Image (tube, rainbow over all chains, first blue to last red; front, side):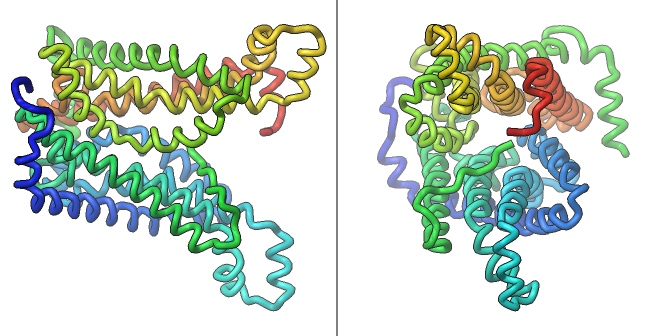
Length: 225
Length: 231
């Protein structure tokens, strides 16, 4: 990688279209994983809140899954599901559980009993109480989980580049640049994927301020096992 | 079922456990790189975290930057280092340094944040009592704060170790060896036995690290602390 400038601006400007496409794929892969991961985690958290005994088991399995390297899990799925979006999504979704479930459970756990009693006293049905009291009070920690999961998933999407050129989002440029000894490509892929993670993080901070205008400006500290 | 047989067959073959490309060498590379980066990271992060926790200085900085630091995707960090490390050394800068430096970066935040939180969370009355007894600041840190903060420190080390062992697998994509190399070669040679052998070994190593550090954490917790309920 010597004898030429670190950034070849001509290459960058000639590839704005494909770079935008890769960025779109990055957001698409991360979006599906965070969306489906959130939905499944919400169900797991709801189950854990009702049946308290299964909660340690859920967290144990989620932690064990998170421990398995993404690289190994992607590669292991290839003989089973092929070089498909599914192969990229299964690990990405699995890894969100350990970030979502504890935050959702903790969010609902810390709704005070007297607030629930007051809601019952005002004649709320169970559904009304959940929708209008419990959920809003749980929002800060739920959003804290969303921040962690979106940042982590956007980072992990880059690893799916090992599954071939058709996947990986911006990670494609990191790997391709490495193979071709081409610094500009690596910088584009690396810096833009970090940028996406930062923007997603800030986006969820703004979302939380919008959803809970009564809360203090201080953002919630997430649980991290 | 074919996959299980192929994996078992590959792992059971003694030929794969010897020579310069054998499993022991790959395991040594993997654990060696992880260990070195963990130690390098701890040498910086541990004293810094203890000092910030003890003095309370710059704690706003810790809280602010820890999450941002964690947002750095290792795959991108390893790649981004390549153009710069190759300037230092064309060979090692292309194979070893990017993964090594990225792992040092990865291990930093959990060690730093836990060292800070562990010491900052020590009951201030205890610290004041120690000070009133005439203990010097250094003695307070070594004799009171660190022993009480030890379980929290150990949790930070565990989390750093598990993340590094797991993430060092990525190094195989960027010229480094380690157990990830088995996965890369298995994939390239369409050898499912080698691929899954690598997957099994990497996952086992990560889980073993988790178990080992959890045991260490229990050993390090003073009996006076473990008797208490969480608090």
